[in-house]
Length: 132
Image (cartoon, rainbow, N blue to C red; front, side, top):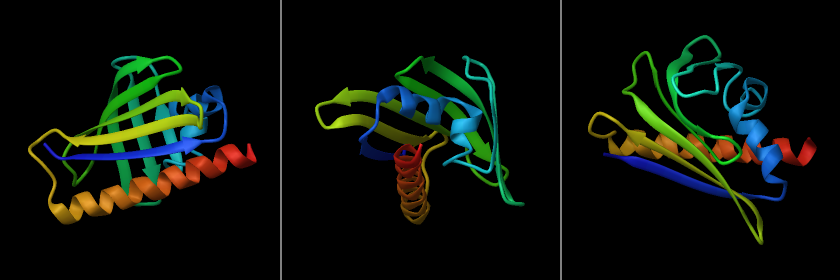
């Protein structure tokens, strides 16, 4: 299985970061233009950015204030599991994002593009905390 992993240390409190990764309002600030999420195991997840990028999924795990995992897919994509985990350290709040292929793996170019997309999204998330 292919895994993409990104980490970012945030200057803000873990509670503020948790709001950005676990609520529709927070996710709409950095992940997608429109988000619907039932933040409970088995809950539905729907995202849309622009006309073409729509994804649907299911929340698999939620550990309030610490971690959220969901499986999602776009119309032409394979399903992947995304996990967002928060922990505190002396440097601030550490956010670790991983996306894992569930059907055998993405091509090297697809993995590279998705990794870049996640890096950019996490930079937007960090910016949300600065201006919040």
